[in-house]
Length: 174
Length: 115
Image 1 (spheres, one colour):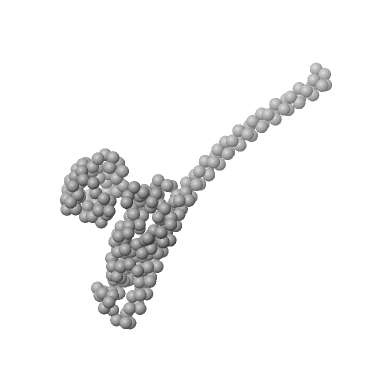
Image 2 (cartoon, rainbow over the protein chains, first blue to last red):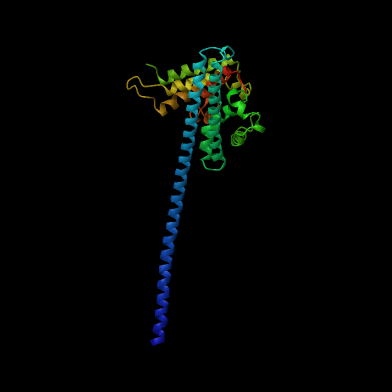
């Protein structure tokens, strides 16, 4: 074999070697990419779980505040009718009433936030539906005087996400 | 000592009595609105709470999920619920704000209703 032959064989050898190296690294990259996708999926599932837990916490906290504000009213009234309160007592009741209404609004805000996350696909749709299907019924029930003030009529209600999800889940009930 | 079947029988009887008292007749269609706040619904919820509160006499530990399922299946069987309804029965799955909503309505009534 002459010098040109050696050079040609050498070049072919280098090219072959570089092809093997390329194949090796591309297969490594593919498996790393698969692993990173799987890690991203896992991270996504964890993030969804954390979001759902945090939404539930917000609702639970709003509920506790609503219970606290609500219980102060019968404690103050002690069985008396509102009409029988003295002039000095009425402002205090009005203050408690304002607190109560604000806590109810805050409670509904927590649901609005939760249903907004549901609509943005930031929760597990099926699990979320199973968890909240009964609660949303109460919130949108016109007979529930406590929520009706803020929820009805639907056209003027500020809680758009709640109504959107309610209609999605209960569209066959009228 | 009460058996799971015995408990299920008593619970099923309570629900049956509530259904009877609400006037829900077999094979008749009822509006979901009639069911809400009905005696039947309240009794089902009370039964659910009672089942959750059962403890074993010997260990005083809360009942296992498997034993709860046995009781609920037995109640379903005694009430003659169709399999499809049993499969979709979400008694154990959804969260609830019923009690808070009831409390809220009571307070609203004290304050004189809507504003």
